[in-house]
Every structure is written in C-alpha cells, then in structure tokens.
Length: 46
Length: 448
Picture (cartoon, each protein chain N blue to C red):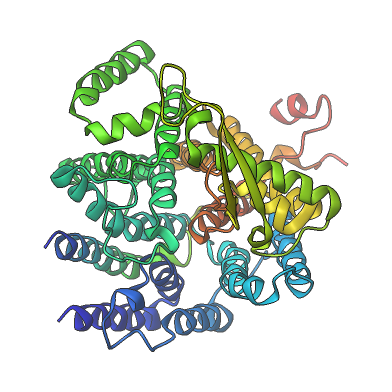
C-alpha cells in the first residue's frame, strides 16, 4: 500500500516533469542567455 | 498491473524522447536510480532497459544535439583517468572474478558521468536532471519515510520496496544520499521553473525533506545523523536570519528527540562509546588493515580486495558497563571497507585515491568560485546560479562526510551530482565567460 502510493506519486510527478520539459523551447536552446563579451573588454583603440 | 505500470511509464518516456532526445538521458537517470527492472516481477526483469536507454541517450545526442563549443573539462579528464586506472587494476586484481563483478557497474557510472555534462547545455536541462534525480530518489525516500513514521524502522529492517541491499536501496547509502539531496530539493523549490514556487510545491517540498530526515532514523544508520548535523551547519552559511534559524533548529531538536524510537536513541549512543561497539571497532580494524595493505601494494588490489582481510578486533569495554566486556577480543575476516576513502586506497592504491580525491576537491572549489562570483549579482537572470552552486556544494560535502563511514566511492547517484556540477560549470563558462580585464586607463577612455 505504502509502496504503491510512493511509486504512483513519484511517477506521476516524473511524468508531469517530462511533459512540461518537452513543451518548452528552452530545453534545447537557451533564448538569449548567451551574451556578447562586453565592448570594454576588447581593445578598439588600437 | 504493477509491471504494466512500469512498462507504460518507460514506453511513455521513450515516446517523449523521440520528440526531445534529452528525455532519453533523463530516462537513463530514472532507470539507474529506481531500477524498475528489479521491482518488476516478470515483464522487465529480463530486458536490458538500462542499456537501451544509454544507447538511445548517446544516439540521440550524436544525431541531433547542438555540439558547438564542446570541450572536455578538467574533471571529465579526471573521470577518464579514473576509468582507465580502474580498468587496469581490474585486470591485475587480487580477486579477478569479484573485481570484474564490481567493474561491471562502476564503468557504467563513470562513463555516464563523463557523458552527462556534455548534454547539459541549457539551464532547463540542468533543472530537468536535478528534478529527475530527486524525484527518482523520492520513490525510495517516501516509502522509507512513511514506514518509519508508521513503525519506527530499525537497523537493517526498514523495507524500502526492494530487498537486495543494492544501489540506493541499502540503508547506510540511502541515509547519506537522502540528506545530501536536501539542499537540491530546497533549491528546486525556490528557483524551479518547471514547478514554480507556490503552495503545492512548498507542501511537497516540506513533506519530502521531512521524509529525507526520517530515513537515517528509520534505517538507524549513524552516518545519517552526522550528515544531518553537517547539513544544519552548512545551511547556516547563507542564512539571513541566523539567530532565528538556530532557535528553530534547537526547537525542532527539542521536540523531535523525545519522539525518537528507543532503539534509535540506544544505537546513536554507541557513537560515543564506539570503542566498545563491535561494528565501529571492526571499521577501525579494517582501516588499519587497509593502510598496512596499501604500504605493500601501493597500486591497490583491485575491486573487492578487502575479501582477503583477517582481523583481530580488541573491544576496549564501554565506560560504566557498556556493550562489551572489557578487553574482549573478536575475530573477523573479509570485512568491507565501510569508508569510501579506504575503499579507494585499498582497491585503487595511492594513484586511484589521488585522482578520486582531486575530482571531488576540484568540484568543491569550482562550486565555491561560482558561489562567490554570483552571490551578489543583481541580474535576475543570474539569481539562480549562486544558490545552485551552493546546493550542489552542500550536497557534495555531505556525501564526502558520509563517505567517511560508508563505502560509496562509486555510488552512481553521486557521480550524477558530480556531473551536474561539471555541467553547471561548463554552462556558465559558455554563457558568462569571464571578462578579460581591460588595459589600464582604457575603461575611462571608453566611457569618456
């Protein structure tokens, strides 16, 4: 009984996690996370 | 019904994996932790589902995943070296058959730990991995927690749903892991984006953390109590209201202690009188044997080299009439290491121990660097980084202390935590490269 309750609860949450993950575009590509290096880090006055 | 449930779940995961191949990676994590094939009665126990998910995960990554900017980190190189070294010691092992049996699962854990970080390319993937790890471990922890509440548990007698003492289903191992995973659970509750913080998340988190804390009580593993103590101290580091936190901890202890089962209190008392306790004295004897052994065999004896030990254990006698008569002597043989540190020394020698220790030390240092770099960030996009680095580091420290008393040098769950650390580190390097310092005076000139 306890074993079944824990298995069903955790597997339902795992399934919900998987379902929510596949519906998000940022699973495979972070939108806008990569930032260009700041301009002052480069020498432009040479 | 039971078996159909697992088959349905696994088929569902595979189906979703064909839409997003990262789900295959998470499927492997789930199979490795929960071992549904061992919980199954007839349908799954003859199918190599772990292998199937591994092949799908690697195949999916090779076929469609973005691999730009991919490079091996220092710790992945260390894992490769450790893998190669364990392979060599297995070929020259003192007990070839026994060594091969352990190598059979160790190499998989190491290879997966090397592979996993390269798939962790986005923040959501790191979060997804941590969710799958904690929820999978929860399937064991919730069972243990409820049974402890219902019956009080007992050393070696808490039934976690699978009676073969392997993987996370062993009492001392789950006690350490259940506490080591608490910082990650708290991180997910505060900074999660799959399950955003709300009342339901808070309720589940509170119940799950409570179940985690019950595991060392249910299994009566003394290591777990030490881990809980360390967790309480580590959480103090980033606590804003320290006085309130310490008062809360004191209050919880005051309320909890009278409610603890009598057998648990008695067993915890043996931490003080450890010299009179045969289990603890045997450990000391094994550690002494291992230290002597490695002096003669500096390259280690390969996996399961402990099988050759013969021990004479002197029990000092507990002060005030304890557990054993004074100066009693016991004999034992083929005792396991009961410590990951001595496990590494005895099996992999000084070199293997050195690689292993460096791997863990480097992880702690890197997490500390991330913690400090992003602790005071004001950018909301970066607000999750320092808390995650802290959570992983706290879990790592708890593991390393628990590992003093439990032979879990190659526990796959821990290598997934290590891989999550490497993944986080590589991810930050990619999206937030350290700015090269501007030449003197240039910043002012640029601003002018």
